[in-house]
Length: 167
View 1: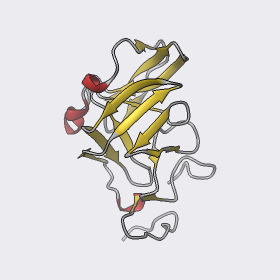
View 2: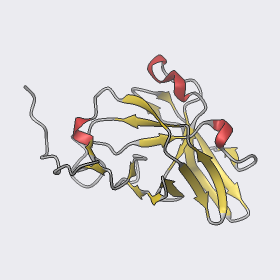
View 3: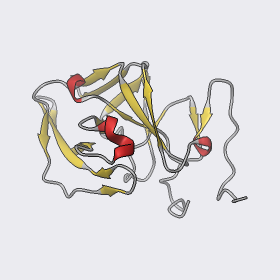
View 4: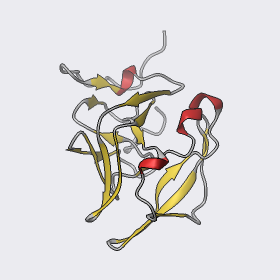
């Protein structure tokens, strides 16, 4: 039996603990209303999102490419990253009349077989974009590297903050 590096926060009714999420991660579809905005511009809106659930991380919500507003994405020149589970990430700048955010969103254009349903779907950093799930404003995962979306129905503690790198 393996020991968890931290003690999970208590769970209230209607909540889930990130410490019950699997490793390797799971891909779960959702019909919750997900929106992404930059200023006054609606970047994306869907009720066909995917959640990636991974131990110690708040979910990352992915939006089908068809539900992204036309003309708001430009392929970024940012360095790509590699996820051991999903594959190589492609980064996207968000460009609107309200501003430009370099590498604010990313996708897996040719994900691994386990995550094939994510092909072309996008997610974004809630620290830079206004993201909501069923009307609730998402809080960003600490640390800046991971892109988890924290809502009231998910409890931690969450990887990403100081001292959590080894979790």
